[in-house]
Image (cartoon, rainbow, N blue to C red; front, side, top):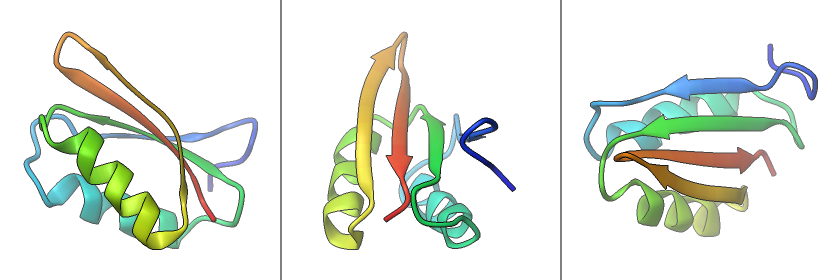
Length: 78
């Protein structure tokens, strides 16, 4: 189980929509409020998908960055 000192990272590189969101949703379901998950994704739609997912679910998108086609999305469980 991830903790504040040991956050969870999901490498979802190579997966296409909707799999990054679905896998993240499953991981979040096993987490507690306030915990943070970092997601690595290569799907070009991931930043917009995660922003919409967080708006709809109440989770907080802490950051969304890109580096050489890899998006790093950091989400805090509501």
